[in-house]
Length: 480
Ligand code: PLP
Image 1 (cartoon, helix red, strand yellow):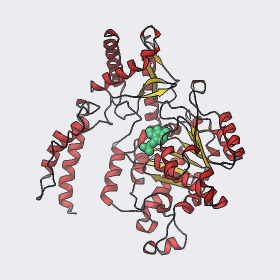
Image 2 (cartoon, protein in one colour; image 1 turned 60 degrees about the horizontal axis):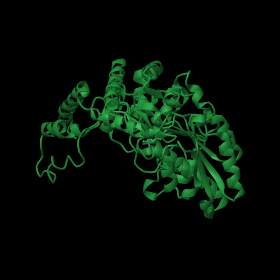
Image 3 (cartoon, protein in one colour; image 1 turned 135 degrees about the vertical axis):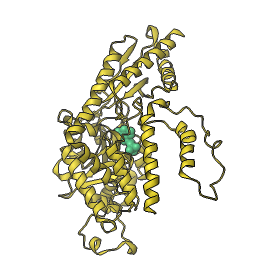
Image 4 (cartoon, protein in one colour; image 1 turned 180 degrees about the vertical axis):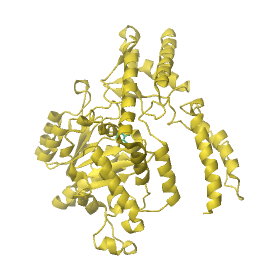
């Protein structure tokens, strides 16, 4: 690494990225390219001789950016947000600059210790119970994604039971969650060897606003126990992916505790809102949980990837995931004086991800972070009001955070056409390139999702987005 070369090229790159952000509104939000577009534009093999950075940047501009869907566009309202910020970006840059691999404490003590401290800070902002902090038996760890978070806790829970019952009990182990739970849980079950029929996704409906019913859970558990199965893991969600449903943590947690079940809470998206006192109630009951996860890379201004996971019993993770090969042995680890995060995750190697979260917490401060969340929620409320005021549309589920679920009503209430109509509306608005929204299906109905959460989004973008939706709806209804 030549420092002067780095200085010169990195300045160019920062200029390029700053210009990208300045002009981000000029791009179609959803990339409009066809599959395979890039192969025709790039050579078949890597160059023999070095090229200049300028050549590469020209190609990025001409060939890569058209194939990018602009998640940071202020008119991006699809899925859930994936935030970036100057603070998060600088943290990523510093992490790339230092480029250490912090699997054990000794491989970079600052990386492990900063991660423990920053997750304690964030845990305190969320008012998590003290058992989740690193000062006791628990602690936080940064995973790449919520999918990895649920996988590692599922493995910890599985192995805790199997240590008691023996390995042959694996086929009897049962996992519970609602049918609104993110598919990451199913993937974790697949990897964890849980019998596919024993991953029980309990039915939800509009009567509970798509939240998991404790009664249903209680019944499922007793039915399963009576047939010799072994309930061992419950995943509740605060802010489901389809509609931001909030499972009732307190009652679910009590059932889990009474049955010796590991209770995981997935608050990947909505957890961020819980730093505001008025939204903290949505994780009331987290005291009952064994583990809790929220994605700082979704709605917390921290560049991807940064998924915060807390556990009450770090030994459960370590017992499941620890390895101790000769080539990694060192005095600090052997003396049990330190945390070695390699034993809390799937891979060995790990990046210095706490830097960007630390930067975000320090360069914003709690008050600004709370304003950030509240602003998005207010913009979502504003959008919800626009939808409610147009009798051609309906808001489908109560808005809780910054997601609005809505649909265009089929003319003459002919529900046979409702799903196709909304599917066509989605395609029409997204192919304008002016906005990007996504969809879900709830109780058999095709629903449009409008998720506010891009850092650059202002009221004018929401107003403009609604105009696109109204115009395309008018065109569609006019063509029927
Ligand atoms: N859980 C919930 C509630 C989500 O909304 C998502 C993604 O949107 C996930 C888990 C999966 O997130 P990740 O991509 O971090 O694995």
